[in-house]
Length: 252
Ligand SMILES: NC(=O)C1=CN([C@@H]2O[C@H](COP(=O)(O)OP(=O)(O)OC[C@H]3O[C@@H](n4cnc5c(N)ncnc54)[C@H](O)[C@@H]3O)[C@@H](O)[C@H]2O)C=CC1
Ligand SMILES: O=C(O)C1=N[C@H](C(=O)O)C[C@H](O)C1
Image (cartoon, rainbow, N blue to C red; front, side, top):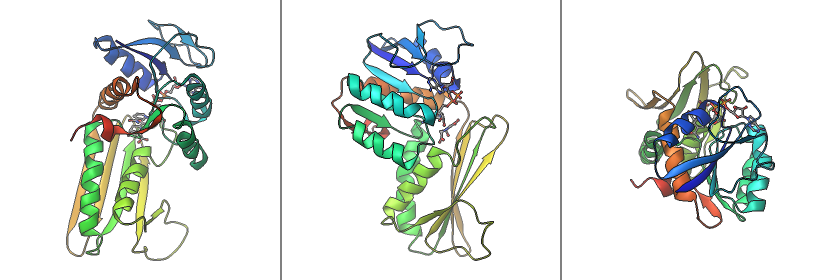
């Protein structure tokens, strides 16, 4: 049985995962970390991972970018594998993820769902055919009105995946309102919409002369992310230091 610490246990994703793990005989949550205490927990909860003295095999993180530096420092010190799902990390924090992964196993993914991870692969293939044929690439993501980071981590990961297939020659345009000029050929426009309870939708548009191809992923519940995170935690427990991602967990 894998013993997991849920970092951000009293948030929306922390609660989804708590529910999923309850019905899973392969993993248990032995402790939670959260500063917010408005939830009844079935495991001990600590303010910080530093303060947590419960033995575990892995940490699952769905918290806030501001919490990630301290989390990673403690995981490195305790050689505790971590599934890092929080989005909105700065460039500096991403470099820190790389450094920490030399000390412990880190699996970072902006989206834990099966569908999005398959789509990442499909987008590479589409881009390598369509971009040379002159198609413009645009991305629109939609999320609930409580989301703090924009654009979504998934939108950035999708753009990175496309860009990788195009020799990283494309730049990202997040705002066309500042300049009055036509779009550049080698740019990917990324737009964020926030409203209501939208769980998460990502549209990738390849627009060519007289034809358009669109890929769309819609999450109808947060469980799609939770399931992936639980599988990732089971996979990562006991793994040596290094960088991992969902392609190590999901066999396509
Ligand atoms: N990779 C993926 O598949 C997914 C990633 N996310 C990302 O996960 C993160 C959390 O999402 P939600 O659960 O919706 O947010 P939320 O705001 O509902 O939950 C975050 C929880 O973390 C806690 N927290 C914040 N700072 C903390 C700190 N310093 N120490 C301990 N606890 C702290 C908060 O009190 C809160 O309970 C966001 O960055 C979101 O974008 C969300 C869904 C899927
Ligand atoms: O905050 C969310 O809710 C989500 N965040 C992730 C992201 O930023 O990509 C993944 C998912 O879309 C839900």
